[in-house]
Amino acid sequence: MEKKLPAAIPAEELEKMEHYAALLAARADELVARGERRPRALIETYGCQQNVADSDRMRGMLELCGYDEAESRKDADFILFNTCAVREHAELRVLGNIGALKHEKEERPGLVIGICGCMMQQEHRVREIMEKYRHVSVVFGTHTFYKLPELLYSALEGERRAEVTNGETAIPEGLPVKRSGGDRAFVTIMYGCNNFCTYCIVPYTRGRERSREREKILEEVRSLAAAGIGEIMLLGQNVNSYGKDRYEDYRFADLLREIDGVPGDFTLKFMTSHPKDLTREVIDAMAESRHVARELHLPVQSGSDRILKKMNRHYTAESYKQLIAYARERMPDIRLTSDIIVGFPTETEEDFEATLALVREVRYFNLFTFIYSKRSGTPAATMEGQVEESVKKERIARLIEVQTEIRKQYYWEE
Ligand code: 5AD
Ligand code: SF4
Image 1 (tube, rainbow, N blue to C red):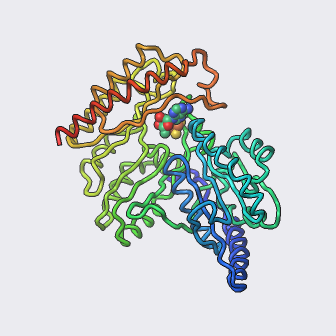
Image 2: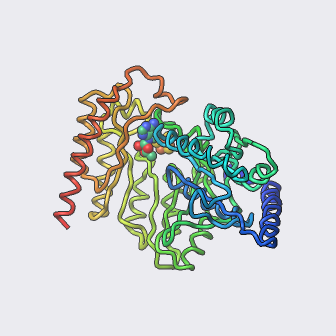
Image 3: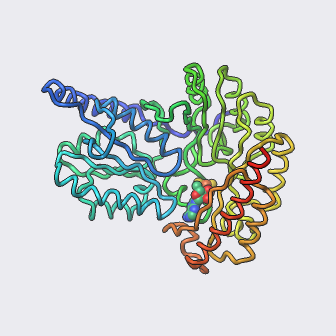
């Protein structure tokens, strides 16, 4: 029996999108008929691969709107920032870049500037843009990106609009796509996250977990494989939860096996896995596959059980290591990578040393290291015991040093 299905974008919304795209395309054609150049758009993408995948859809819509791709900001008639909210640093970079365009907009009033993505799922940021960055006229969030043609049209009519919803969590099925990844294609298998790790803004900006329909995913994979793509990367904030919201007993391992059966000469990768949800069945499916790369990105975040508990991660350093041991038993050549946050609230020297010990023991091929960044609205932001910036910096430097040593040994072994 199938569960209540997560909704796709309603047909009338898709029709509306196409309607505005057609109006814009007619304008673009008129320009060309007058001997002017076709309008050009530039999307600057920040953050994770999901944003890259969303930008590919937006580029598809812009193509439908009759826009060519611009090579630079100066060359563009429409500049859109697809933003990330995971760390403050990324947010400040975007704000700096948008601020720097104020002058450009004064010189070229016809220029349209837009901002979308995770940053715009935060009310305070939307308010800030609408009040202080008045040269921005197109604002939308992660749930409404299919409204791009309509908002761009309004902007050309002289309006400034923000279209952000929180409750609406439609799956963006049925949108045109213009892929940017060359020989690699991203295929989203699920959107959103239900985990609420206490440091993370993603469950607030991307909404609840929604799995795409199995047949839609397979169709996309089949057509990519038939076109001769070299690498397919399955995407989701938490790919190991695939299917739970949609199917009674069809899970990520089943999907992986089915995709592995698709004919073609492609390498299959996936990210991101959560250690609490990565099952032995998935590891078995990897080990027994033809296409799946011997690579596993399994973010541990910390090696201290006390900190893992405060992060709401639902595993211990020991259970994590057992999972890794099983993966290595099934695939001795597997390359492991991970994300680690240093300086989570209350992290002591002892907690941090537990992280170093875990890193030394697991011997990752590659590590993505982050200084804890306070995200307003998340539980960790108001926890007692925020760690001094200088301590965080010292710890991340030590962590990078340990990882650099490990990486060198990999090269000596090769
Ligand atoms: N501060 C620092 N790093 C963070 N990450 C997520 N939220 C934060 C935060 N508030 C890191 C995690 C995650 C990666 C994508 O970003 O390590 O796995
Ligand atoms: Fe954020 Fe945790 Fe979800 Fe990853 S699993 S997106 S870190 S809440």
